[in-house]
Image 1 (cartoon, rainbow, N blue to C red):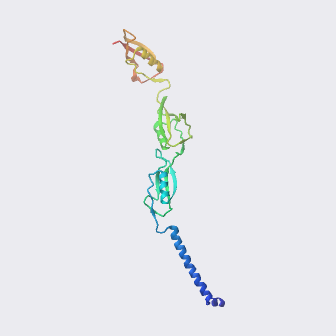
Image 2: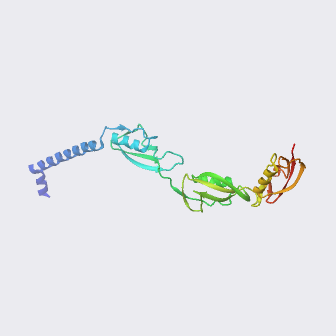
Length: 250
């Protein structure tokens, strides 16, 4: 221990202590000024307005001002692909050079969803389900079926869609629904002011038959239908139903 105290009193120790102190001061200044240079202390710049621009234009602006960027994407129906909809930090914020700006854009490719089972659901319910999945109802087709406004089939690109099939958001689909009438029922046609031959042709095309013919007829070729039974107010009748006609030349 006495040797240690004797060493502390020597010139060699005092010189080493001074050298060590000087080295600490130099190291402090190197770290201090090095951090200022590394962090660009006191230097800042405004974040440009990027929201509302196309991503290619936004990237070009960031490259010119020396800012980095990171891109995330989301899908929005009927929105322009590649459009910047969010930026962080916001425009006019002050940041250091080289700062990363986070951009959110509209994706170029629509994500896919599993098509739900909407068979036998009514039109209102099915439409709500479809819209919640960001799909569109492109068209509705009605066929003869007693289930009025009930989904009987769903088509995409002309093909029936099975539940669970992957389909891109934004796709337009076609709904096939029942019109409330039986498969063997048709609308009663309006035959007024038609000639007898024209009326027969119209009835045959619908699968109906010509019933009794009455009226004042002097020339069957020029006679016109002035009344019919059942008339068009009956709306729907079974195929094969006879339609009675009243003809007149006056």
